[in-house]
Image (cartoon, rainbow, N blue to C red):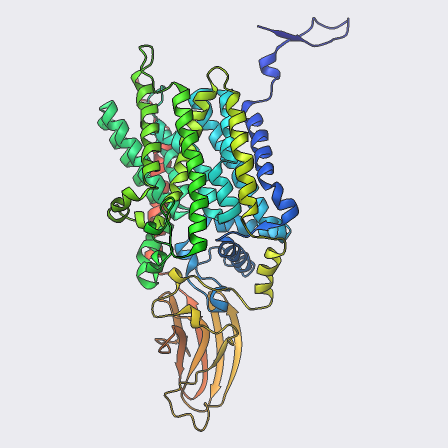
Length: 580
């Protein structure tokens, strides 16, 4: 062993021998530094161009600012938005997973508002690099894992999502995918190590739930991907125990995310969720190299297709160069099963992006709600990391660094030049709240019976409703309206009116609202063309109170998650050794 000697005074004990291996920085710390550098490199255009205002930028930023606004009101777990649909709101936070909007809202409270998108990307891509490092280290060793971490932190799909898409939630989910794959390989027994422990299943379940709680389409893709790996492992290893561990891990993961999944599934009947598959969002219109009547849509399809092609070629070249698929006598069957499963996963992910798999998009449960077949690039990027680490491990592996740089810089430059940059975008979004204007809503979260595009942009919080069908030649009933409380989930209005009337609130009807007038529960009404809340009142003074009351499905979801947590805690509890 090489030794490093420390200088010491003549009157002290002999020099202490310190192994160089102990003086080195921990490998995870080196990987963290490289991931930070890769994330900063990804963000370089943000420093002089402002925020990349991609397709989903306004949606995510509006959610962050809305959550931060409600936190200041004391609402720790928002359900209803305060400022979408120009103040009428929508039940967005029931259906959109919470982790991304929690992180974005937290950053908006502690950082200058213009820094928040870049800070979000910086954190998620640093996490992505570390996640890829732990996967690569387990498959090929430390040195190859360093490069795979750098690659994954700024891979072609990340460039597309960061510059063109601005889908921050999917970016967070993708950051978790490599470590989820590592946990899945351990549960499946595909890694040459000791028998999987109960903690391995718990670790997988937590990560699986985290992906679902980050982004629903990524959750669907992750579910099918790990199910494929588990099936492959059970068949090739001829082990029913693999199937049992896999089923247990998946069920526990769904249970941990039950507080989100159960209400999101049940309450779809209360909104126009079918609009998530409207024109332009259908899988058939988004396969690779698909042409549509919309020129801009076609142009983006070609951009995403080119990114997918780069990833596919890189994964294929790395798989061939790695040598892990060659049959050798000195290679254990577990290794063949491992790399064969990864190759199968990457191949099927590739096929799912092409039109020949269209029947599967209609037949497989919930697959249509992935919307965009090119989202399967997230899996190909992870598989590329695995084979890339294995290829780097071989002779002249440093050449892969050159190849990645040659591919990444021109692609990154092209994407930077083909997106919209706006240094004032975040300030504009914040001004929508401070001015009381709000934002446009989303089709799929609009309550049934409503057309959010017809909602007025500057509606008062409360007014006497004037129905065109009623005889109002004498004018609407005179009334005095006073807003007592107007918070996102708690509204109090005092009305004095000489005749019976209906009070129109700047709020949409939803089954979770409990409406009372003078302490008595009433059923709100609606106009013919909108789902605006109309509260009927009698002549005289009326105290209207509208509160958000947690429906039973949300309570059931919370109960499922708590029960799953107790199961996980029980599995982690040490067993008592039998007494002699």
